Image (cartoon, rainbow, N blue to C red; front, side):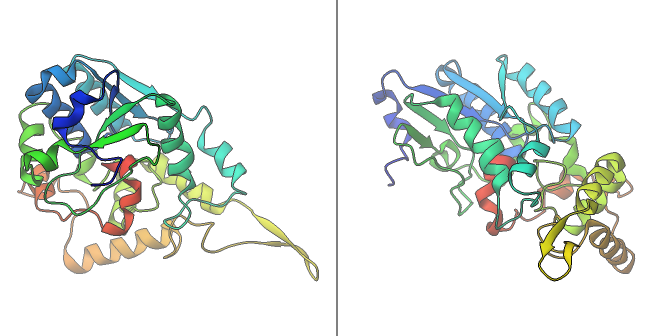
Length: 289
Protein backbone atom coordinates (compact mmCIF):
# COMPACT_ATOMS: atom_id res chain seq x y z
CA UNK A 1 0.00 0.00 0.00
CA UNK A 2 1.29 3.47 -0.89
CA UNK A 3 2.55 5.45 2.06
CA UNK A 4 -0.22 8.05 1.68
CA UNK A 5 -3.03 5.46 1.88
CA UNK A 6 -4.15 4.01 5.17
CA UNK A 7 -6.94 1.56 6.12
CA UNK A 8 -9.84 2.72 8.27
CA UNK A 9 -8.66 0.55 11.14
CA UNK A 10 -5.46 2.60 11.46
CA UNK A 11 -7.15 5.99 11.75
CA UNK A 12 -7.06 5.85 15.53
CA UNK A 13 -3.27 5.69 15.52
CA UNK A 14 -3.04 9.16 13.97
CA UNK A 15 -3.38 11.11 17.19
CA UNK A 16 -4.31 14.75 16.73
CA UNK A 17 -5.06 14.38 13.02
CA UNK A 18 -7.68 16.49 11.27
CA UNK A 19 -10.36 14.61 9.36
CA UNK A 20 -11.52 16.17 6.08
CA UNK A 21 -13.91 15.20 3.30
CA UNK A 22 -13.99 17.19 0.08
CA UNK A 23 -17.35 17.60 -1.64
CA UNK A 24 -17.47 18.33 -5.35
CA UNK A 25 -21.23 18.59 -5.67
CA UNK A 26 -21.14 15.18 -7.34
CA UNK A 27 -22.92 11.98 -6.33
CA UNK A 28 -20.02 9.92 -4.93
CA UNK A 29 -18.54 12.45 -2.50
CA UNK A 30 -22.05 13.39 -1.34
CA UNK A 31 -22.92 9.73 -0.76
CA UNK A 32 -19.70 9.28 1.20
CA UNK A 33 -20.57 12.20 3.48
CA UNK A 34 -24.01 10.69 4.13
CA UNK A 35 -22.45 7.24 4.64
CA UNK A 36 -19.93 8.56 7.15
CA UNK A 37 -22.66 10.37 9.08
CA UNK A 38 -24.94 7.36 9.24
CA UNK A 39 -22.47 4.49 9.67
CA UNK A 40 -19.53 6.16 11.40
CA UNK A 41 -21.08 8.89 13.59
CA UNK A 42 -17.95 9.10 15.75
CA UNK A 43 -15.94 10.00 12.64
CA UNK A 44 -18.65 12.35 11.38
CA UNK A 45 -18.25 14.41 14.52
CA UNK A 46 -14.59 14.96 13.66
CA UNK A 47 -14.89 15.51 9.92
CA UNK A 48 -14.46 18.93 8.35
CA UNK A 49 -16.56 18.93 5.20
CA UNK A 50 -15.43 21.35 2.51
CA UNK A 51 -16.20 22.48 -1.01
CA UNK A 52 -13.71 24.32 -3.21
CA UNK A 53 -15.62 26.93 -5.17
CA UNK A 54 -14.23 28.13 -8.50
CA UNK A 55 -17.03 30.64 -8.92
CA UNK A 56 -18.00 28.86 -12.14
CA UNK A 57 -20.20 26.11 -10.73
CA UNK A 58 -23.79 25.47 -11.77
CA UNK A 59 -26.52 26.86 -9.51
CA UNK A 60 -27.76 23.27 -9.09
CA UNK A 61 -24.46 22.44 -7.37
CA UNK A 62 -24.91 25.21 -4.80
CA UNK A 63 -28.52 24.17 -4.22
CA UNK A 64 -27.51 20.55 -3.67
CA UNK A 65 -24.74 21.52 -1.25
CA UNK A 66 -27.25 23.52 0.82
CA UNK A 67 -29.49 20.45 1.01
CA UNK A 68 -26.54 18.22 1.93
CA UNK A 69 -25.35 20.65 4.58
CA UNK A 70 -28.79 20.56 6.21
CA UNK A 71 -28.78 16.76 6.22
CA UNK A 72 -25.28 16.53 7.69
CA UNK A 73 -26.08 19.07 10.39
CA UNK A 74 -22.61 20.51 9.94
CA UNK A 75 -21.15 23.40 7.99
CA UNK A 76 -19.62 22.68 4.60
CA UNK A 77 -16.65 25.04 4.54
CA UNK A 78 -16.36 26.96 1.27
CA UNK A 79 -12.80 27.30 0.00
CA UNK A 80 -11.50 29.28 -2.97
CA UNK A 81 -8.26 30.36 -4.60
CA UNK A 82 -9.12 33.97 -3.80
CA UNK A 83 -9.08 34.80 -7.52
CA UNK A 84 -11.65 34.20 -10.24
CA UNK A 85 -11.22 32.18 -13.43
CA UNK A 86 -10.44 35.26 -15.51
CA UNK A 87 -7.47 36.05 -13.29
CA UNK A 88 -5.98 32.58 -13.72
CA UNK A 89 -6.73 32.68 -17.44
CA UNK A 90 -4.58 35.80 -17.75
CA UNK A 91 -1.82 34.15 -15.71
CA UNK A 92 -1.86 31.31 -18.22
CA UNK A 93 -1.63 33.62 -21.23
CA UNK A 94 -5.33 33.31 -22.14
CA UNK A 95 -4.78 29.61 -22.87
CA UNK A 96 -7.96 27.75 -21.95
CA UNK A 97 -7.51 24.70 -19.72
CA UNK A 98 -7.66 21.27 -21.33
CA UNK A 99 -7.12 17.59 -20.59
CA UNK A 100 -3.41 18.16 -21.24
CA UNK A 101 -3.17 21.48 -19.36
CA UNK A 102 -5.38 21.23 -16.27
CA UNK A 103 -4.24 24.42 -14.64
CA UNK A 104 -7.79 25.12 -13.47
CA UNK A 105 -7.79 21.99 -11.29
CA UNK A 106 -4.31 22.69 -9.97
CA UNK A 107 -4.82 26.38 -9.15
CA UNK A 108 -8.52 26.50 -8.26
CA UNK A 109 -9.10 23.13 -6.57
CA UNK A 110 -5.93 21.40 -5.39
CA UNK A 111 -3.94 24.41 -4.15
CA UNK A 112 -6.83 25.81 -2.04
CA UNK A 113 -7.25 22.36 -0.46
CA UNK A 114 -3.55 22.09 0.39
CA UNK A 115 -3.59 25.64 1.78
CA UNK A 116 -6.64 24.68 3.86
CA UNK A 117 -4.90 21.76 5.55
CA UNK A 118 -1.44 23.37 5.65
CA UNK A 119 1.15 21.16 7.32
CA UNK A 120 -1.34 19.53 9.69
CA UNK A 121 -1.61 15.77 9.91
CA UNK A 122 -4.77 15.03 7.93
CA UNK A 123 -6.99 12.07 7.12
CA UNK A 124 -8.73 12.69 3.79
CA UNK A 125 -11.82 10.59 3.03
CA UNK A 126 -12.24 9.80 -0.69
CA UNK A 127 -15.43 8.51 -2.30
CA UNK A 128 -14.09 6.02 -4.82
CA UNK A 129 -16.14 2.83 -5.00
CA UNK A 130 -15.01 -0.78 -4.87
CA UNK A 131 -16.18 -1.36 -8.47
CA UNK A 132 -13.86 1.34 -9.85
CA UNK A 133 -10.27 1.11 -10.98
CA UNK A 134 -9.02 4.59 -10.19
CA UNK A 135 -7.38 6.53 -7.41
CA UNK A 136 -8.22 10.18 -7.95
CA UNK A 137 -6.24 12.95 -6.32
CA UNK A 138 -3.90 11.77 -3.58
CA UNK A 139 -1.63 14.44 -2.18
CA UNK A 140 2.09 13.79 -2.24
CA UNK A 141 2.43 15.51 1.12
CA UNK A 142 3.41 12.98 3.79
CA UNK A 143 1.05 14.65 6.25
CA UNK A 144 -2.08 13.89 4.18
CA UNK A 145 -3.32 10.31 4.46
CA UNK A 146 -6.04 9.01 2.12
CA UNK A 147 -8.81 6.67 3.27
CA UNK A 148 -11.29 4.88 0.96
CA UNK A 149 -14.33 3.75 3.00
CA UNK A 150 -16.39 2.60 0.00
CA UNK A 151 -13.59 0.35 -1.21
CA UNK A 152 -12.99 -1.15 2.22
CA UNK A 153 -16.70 -1.73 2.82
CA UNK A 154 -17.33 -3.07 -0.69
CA UNK A 155 -19.81 -0.43 -1.87
CA UNK A 156 -20.57 -0.26 -5.59
CA UNK A 157 -22.40 2.14 -7.93
CA UNK A 158 -25.84 0.79 -7.05
CA UNK A 159 -25.17 1.42 -3.36
CA UNK A 160 -24.37 5.08 -4.04
CA UNK A 161 -27.78 5.66 -5.62
CA UNK A 162 -29.45 3.86 -2.72
CA UNK A 163 -27.67 6.05 -0.16
CA UNK A 164 -28.64 9.25 -1.99
CA UNK A 165 -32.18 8.07 -2.68
CA UNK A 166 -32.70 7.44 1.03
CA UNK A 167 -31.34 10.85 2.06
CA UNK A 168 -30.69 13.97 -0.03
CA UNK A 169 -31.56 12.75 -3.52
CA UNK A 170 -29.52 13.07 -6.71
CA UNK A 171 -28.28 16.49 -7.91
CA UNK A 172 -30.63 17.94 -10.51
CA UNK A 173 -27.95 18.65 -13.10
CA UNK A 174 -27.57 14.89 -13.67
CA UNK A 175 -30.71 15.19 -15.78
CA UNK A 176 -28.49 16.38 -18.63
CA UNK A 177 -24.90 16.12 -17.39
CA UNK A 178 -22.72 13.21 -16.24
CA UNK A 179 -20.50 15.15 -13.82
CA UNK A 180 -20.28 18.12 -11.50
CA UNK A 181 -17.64 20.79 -12.03
CA UNK A 182 -17.50 24.12 -13.83
CA UNK A 183 -20.10 24.96 -16.43
CA UNK A 184 -17.36 25.15 -19.08
CA UNK A 185 -15.60 21.90 -18.10
CA UNK A 186 -13.56 20.73 -21.09
CA UNK A 187 -14.46 17.11 -20.36
CA UNK A 188 -18.10 17.67 -21.27
CA UNK A 189 -19.42 15.50 -24.05
CA UNK A 190 -21.13 16.93 -27.11
CA UNK A 191 -24.59 16.21 -25.74
CA UNK A 192 -23.65 17.85 -22.43
CA UNK A 193 -22.69 21.08 -24.20
CA UNK A 194 -26.10 20.84 -25.84
CA UNK A 195 -27.61 20.29 -22.40
CA UNK A 196 -25.84 23.40 -21.10
CA UNK A 197 -27.19 25.44 -24.01
CA UNK A 198 -30.73 24.28 -23.31
CA UNK A 199 -30.68 24.45 -19.51
CA UNK A 200 -28.37 27.43 -18.97
CA UNK A 201 -28.25 29.42 -22.21
CA UNK A 202 -26.58 32.36 -20.46
CA UNK A 203 -23.72 30.14 -19.26
CA UNK A 204 -23.36 28.57 -22.69
CA UNK A 205 -23.08 32.05 -24.17
CA UNK A 206 -20.45 32.96 -21.59
CA UNK A 207 -18.42 29.86 -22.45
CA UNK A 208 -18.81 30.72 -26.12
CA UNK A 209 -17.49 34.24 -25.50
CA UNK A 210 -14.25 32.81 -24.08
CA UNK A 211 -13.68 30.99 -27.36
CA UNK A 212 -14.45 34.05 -29.45
CA UNK A 213 -12.10 36.43 -27.69
CA UNK A 214 -9.68 38.17 -30.00
CA UNK A 215 -6.18 36.78 -29.41
CA UNK A 216 -3.08 37.70 -31.34
CA UNK A 217 0.59 36.85 -31.54
CA UNK A 218 3.50 38.68 -33.14
CA UNK A 219 4.87 37.40 -36.43
CA UNK A 220 8.15 38.89 -37.72
CA UNK A 221 6.77 38.97 -41.24
CA UNK A 222 3.14 39.98 -40.76
CA UNK A 223 3.19 41.68 -37.34
CA UNK A 224 0.20 41.00 -35.08
CA UNK A 225 -1.82 38.06 -36.40
CA UNK A 226 -4.93 36.39 -34.94
CA UNK A 227 -4.67 33.06 -33.12
CA UNK A 228 -7.32 30.38 -33.43
CA UNK A 229 -7.59 26.66 -32.84
CA UNK A 230 -6.99 24.24 -29.99
CA UNK A 231 -6.02 25.98 -26.78
CA UNK A 232 -8.51 28.71 -27.60
CA UNK A 233 -11.51 26.42 -27.74
CA UNK A 234 -12.80 24.29 -24.85
CA UNK A 235 -12.42 21.12 -26.89
CA UNK A 236 -9.78 19.83 -29.29
CA UNK A 237 -12.70 18.61 -31.41
CA UNK A 238 -13.79 22.12 -32.36
CA UNK A 239 -15.74 25.08 -31.01
CA UNK A 240 -18.70 24.48 -28.72
CA UNK A 241 -20.99 25.70 -31.50
CA UNK A 242 -19.63 22.90 -33.68
CA UNK A 243 -19.99 20.36 -30.86
CA UNK A 244 -23.60 21.37 -30.29
CA UNK A 245 -24.34 21.16 -34.00
CA UNK A 246 -23.01 17.59 -34.06
CA UNK A 247 -24.99 16.70 -30.95
CA UNK A 248 -28.19 18.05 -32.48
CA UNK A 249 -27.52 16.12 -35.68
CA UNK A 250 -26.87 12.92 -33.73
CA UNK A 251 -30.00 13.52 -31.68
CA UNK A 252 -32.11 13.74 -34.82
CA UNK A 253 -30.50 10.70 -36.38
CA UNK A 254 -30.88 8.48 -33.35
CA UNK A 255 -34.05 9.99 -31.91
CA UNK A 256 -32.23 10.93 -28.72
CA UNK A 257 -33.68 13.58 -26.43
CA UNK A 258 -30.85 15.44 -24.67
CA UNK A 259 -32.81 15.75 -21.46
CA UNK A 260 -34.98 12.87 -20.34
CA UNK A 261 -37.89 15.02 -19.23
CA UNK A 262 -40.08 13.76 -22.10
CA UNK A 263 -39.09 10.14 -21.62
CA UNK A 264 -41.27 7.67 -19.78
CA UNK A 265 -38.19 6.53 -17.87
CA UNK A 266 -37.23 8.65 -14.88
CA UNK A 267 -33.95 10.48 -15.39
CA UNK A 268 -32.67 9.06 -12.09
CA UNK A 269 -33.10 5.54 -13.49
CA UNK A 270 -31.44 6.52 -16.75
CA UNK A 271 -28.48 7.87 -14.80
CA UNK A 272 -28.07 4.57 -12.94
CA UNK A 273 -27.63 2.81 -16.26
CA UNK A 274 -25.05 5.23 -17.63
CA UNK A 275 -21.40 4.20 -17.76
CA UNK A 276 -18.87 6.03 -15.60
CA UNK A 277 -16.69 8.79 -16.97
CA UNK A 278 -13.80 7.87 -19.24
CA UNK A 279 -10.77 6.78 -17.14
CA UNK A 280 -8.73 9.35 -19.09
CA UNK A 281 -10.21 12.20 -17.08
CA UNK A 282 -9.73 10.76 -13.62
CA UNK A 283 -7.10 13.30 -12.56
CA UNK A 284 -10.01 15.70 -12.25
CA UNK A 285 -11.85 13.61 -9.66
CA UNK A 286 -11.33 16.39 -7.14
CA UNK A 287 -13.79 18.35 -9.33
CA UNK A 288 -16.33 15.71 -10.19
CA UNK A 289 -16.31 12.81 -7.73
